[in-house]
Amino acid sequence: MQYTNIISTTVNGVNTILINRPKKLNALNSDTINELQVAMSRANEDKDIKIVILSGSGEKAFVAGADISEFADFDVEEGKYLAADGQHKLFDFIETLSIPVIAAVNGFALGGGLELAMACHFRIASDNAKMGLPEVSLGVIPGYGGTQRLPQLVGKGRAMEMIMTANMITANEAREYGLVNYVTTQEDLLSFTTKIALRIITNSSVAITAAIKAINANFMDGINGFNIEINEFGNCFGTNDFKEGTQAFLQKRKAKFPGN
Ligand code: COA
Image 1 (cartoon, rainbow, N blue to C red):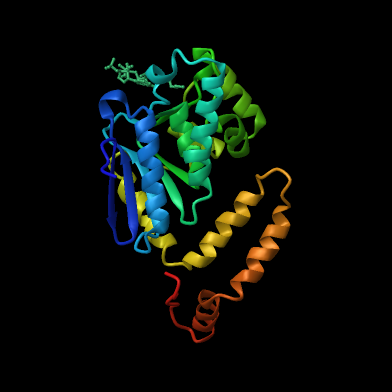
Image 2 (cartoon, rainbow, N blue to C red):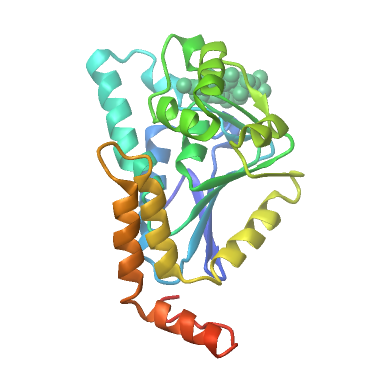
């Protein structure tokens, strides 16, 4: 697939995907969602890609929401399909990817944009970023997982307030809330995020995949996360990465993980 709404580049195992509709503040239309799904899926399959950074192009927006022009005249069934299809195709898919995905929030992350950032494994924001779920101001609620992931990240009370008021919060407030891990200048955002990405990929990619599964299990209904952890922990003992990691420690040398 040739991309027209995103730009994907890979350097040293770090795949940076930029949503590239700056004139529409990178609003998520269906073509962009499809391209992001393909790019994430390719990143997951490509042995040369170890980690993904997701960001927006331009200086103003990460993603200013789902493209309102595409769903303004949908009916009830179309609305349900829109949410179900998007959640399944992209948002849940990103959350359960085997390699880490970091959102570098470079400006407005509103509605579907904040939901997209929240589906990533963690978030770093630039100091100009503004985040919010303004859906109730449009007569709708978040549909790409926002009512579920925002309370997981910031707690129920803050999520209720953010969703009910439809207000935006600043990058520093988002850090205080635990919604983003760091705040940088806009200029430094991608280099800072890349530095963390490069640090992550020195570790065992096989173990990181297991960690993603175990952490995600904490938030899955009807799943006992402790049991998933026991299982994933045990499975690590059967991997060459575990043999190398423990041997390297005992021999006082740096590990060279065969799975990387
Ligand atoms: N869907 C479709 N188009 C969008 C969009 C969205 N979610 N967000 C921005 N755009 C478009 C605007 O329509 C405008 O297009 P135009 O130049 O063809 O008219 C362009 O992006 C620039 O946006 P504009 O509103 O002129 O920029 P601004 O700086 O005045 O305001 C925002 C920025 C983010 C405050 C404002 O664009 C906004 O409120 N966007 C919608 C946010 C939202 O409700 N998202 C949740 C959707 S469920």
